[in-house]
Structures are given as structure tokens and as C-alpha cells.
Image 1 (tube, rainbow, N blue to C red):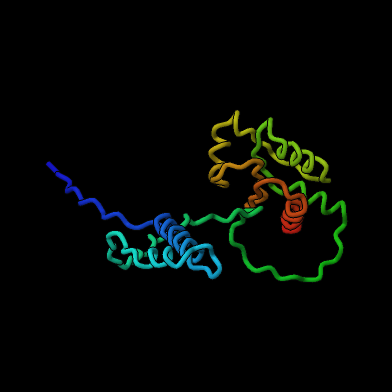
Image 2: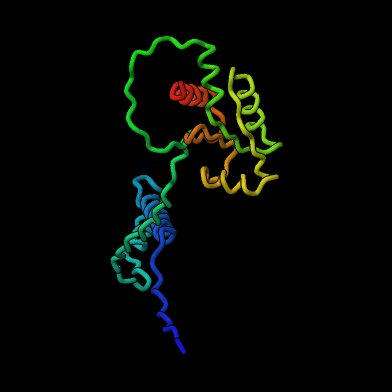
Length: 195
């Protein structure tokens, strides 16, 4: 049987309230003494002599108070970054001068880009993402309702552990939420690789 030892109670420490109260009392005493001893006050010499001759009632010894250091503040838990797009590490890009792409060739290449969107029927951002993808020329995508399809929800959680929607996978680049410019740039990059 394990018995816990009971720690002795800690001695009471003087708090900041105690120090503040002592300071207020000292100011009050000093104000009274200043009024009594102020030149021109209505006190007679006999009254002043009685105040000065009065012995203090039981003098308390002065004990220096040593304040204990404050306990260390608990460190906050580490925060995970919240990027707009979660991407896998990729090779450095070399920027080359490319000739302007034919709009029809780009639209044909966009059809070969694999785009999967994980969403729900009630999500406003999902509706906006759906409308955005529908208006892009030559883009086709597969949409999975994560409330209706448990396997789709598991695949989405593998890509986006936080479970935010919409989650859009463009050939390995995962976007959480809707960023139209970044999403279109990723689709065009993937289309160029298919050309």
C-alpha cells in the first residue's frame, strides 16, 4: 500500500495587499503628525509636548521580508503553422522564358490534370470552390462529400489532419480553403507538365 506523505503547510507570505495596507497606514500617520506639528496649527505647546512625549504602544520588531521569486510561467504549447496550401517538398524551380501558351492547348492540358475536392453540401466555401472550378476552362474534377462517404473522409484526413473543408488535391498539392489565384496557378503548373 502506498502512503503519501503530507507536506507541512507553507508559512504565510506577506502579500502585496499587506504591503499596500502598511503603506496607507504610514501615510495616514505621517499626515496626522504633519498636521499636528505644522507651523501655525492651532495646537498649543502643551498639546505638542504630549504628542511628542507619548510612548509608542508595544513596538513591533521590524522583520525584513524577502519576497520569493515568482514561479516560472508555463510555456505555451507549440503552435502549428496554418498555411493556405499544404504542399509536399518539391525540387527547386528553374524559371525559364516560355513562349505564350495557346489557350486551347492549355485547356486541353487542363483536362488531364487530376483534381479531387473534398467537401460537404452545406459548406459555403465549398460552394464557392465548386463554382470557381466550374468556370475554369477545360478543368474537370472529382468531388467527394465527406459526410456521405466515410472512405473519402479518411482520405481527406490523411491529406489534411485538421479536417478543414474544402480540401482540394491538385496532383499532390493540397489546398485547404479557397485561394483562387493559388489554385489556378497550381492547375496551370500541372497542365504545363502534361504538355
